[in-house]
Structures are given as structure tokens and as C-alpha cells.
Image 1 (cartoon, one colour):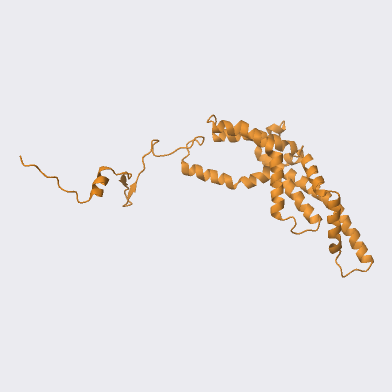
Image 2 (cartoon, rainbow, N blue to C red):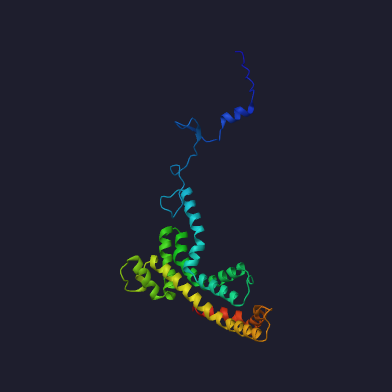
Amino acid sequence: MTPTTPKPVSNPTAATTAAYDPSPPLVFQPGTGYNIPVMPSSSGGLLQIQGLQGETVPWSIVVLLTLLTLIPSVLLCVTPFARLLIVFHFLRQALGLQTTPSNQTLIGLSLILTFFLMQPVGAQIYETAIVPMQGGQITAMEALSRSEGPMRKFMSHYVREKDVALFIDLAKEPRPATIDDVSMRVLVPAYILSELKAGFQIGTVLFLPFLIVDMVVASITTSVGMLQLPPVVISTPLKLLLFLMVDGWHLLIGSLMRSFS
């Protein structure tokens, strides 16, 4: 028998590729003229996120990103942020300062104080909604429903009955027996309206002492004939000195925090 010599392989890389090709199979799509690779999956070709019933990964990402963009609006509507920021802006106008403290400083201070006030509510939401959802015991929608309880309790403590009655009438809803029967559709706008009124009330009271200083300085400068010197040039240092002498920041922050106790 004549031994046969194996034929040399002209391209060893091609032989290796033919033996093992890790690329996904190509599937011809009718009407497109293209071969589109299809990745195999153990769940019917779609990955699922636990807690979002029947939603695929792309749609879940879209929903989560949309919720992230709404966080600032939610923060304004269901926390004391609006009241605090309004009071701080009133204080800056009363002192006659246009850009000091800056807007970033006032917003940052309002955020820190809001976190301080909402920390007990956040801890309760974490224990009742976030922890069970992370453990797979409840879905994301059930966690959202559970988180409404602590927020409802917080908002109902500071909302005015007059504002609740207004939005109940606008929504054409039946009159509730207790505050717990009020829907979130009514409670949230009523709460933000109550916070706006409270912020303007505190700001107006804060404005009055500095307004008196402006009036006294203006009357004195006019009576002595100092017409070429604007009264605000003299009153602004006096208002700042008065604010520092009484330790205004300590009194203001203390009063605001006690208003939420």
C-alpha cells in the first residue's frame, strides 16, 4: 500500500476558523437584503428585569431615565424645598443684596436642609418599600405604592384644609371622610400650594424689619439734603450689621426647622 501524504493547508487560520466560529449565526431577513446576526438567549431572545412585569431591557431603561428627569419636580412638590428656597430669596432681597449669597449657595443650603427634614421619611420608605423590592418579595409598582404611605403622612401634616377642599372641588371628587381618603392627585397640588403660602408669609414677616430700616434711612437722608447719595448705599451696611448682630442665620434656620417639627 502506498502511503498517502497529507496535503498542506494553505491557510492555517482559515482551518482554525472553520473548526470553531464564535460569531453568531446569520439570519436572512426578507425584504431587507441583509443577513442580521441573532444572539441566542435562554429566555426566548429577550432579557427581563425582575420587578418590571413583562418589560424588556430597552423599555425599562427608557422608563428609568424618564423617572430620573422627574426627580427635581418631585422634590419641589412633596418636600419642604420650595418653602425654604422662597424664604432665602426673600432674605436676600430684604438685605438689598442681588447676588450674595449666590443662587447655587441658596439651592445647596435648601437641599441640605430638605435632606435633614426628610431623612426620617426616607428611612421609613427604605424599610417598607426598597428593602422588600431588592429582596424580590414585591415588584417595583408595589414598592411605589408602599412608598406613598410615609409621603402622604408627611404632606397631610402641613397641608391646609382650605387648599385640599379647593382641589377636591376642581377634581369633582367626593368629599373624603378623613385626610387618608384624599387621593394623591389632590394632595400633591394642595401641599405645594400650602408651602408657597407659608413661604411667602415667612418672607413677608422677614422683610418688615429691613423695610423699616430703609424708610428711616431714606427719611433722614432726605431731611438733611443728601439727595445725591442714594439711601440704599447707607441702608445696606446698616441692615447687614443688624442681621449679624442678632445672629440672623441662626435664628432663621432655627425657626424654619421648628416650623416642621
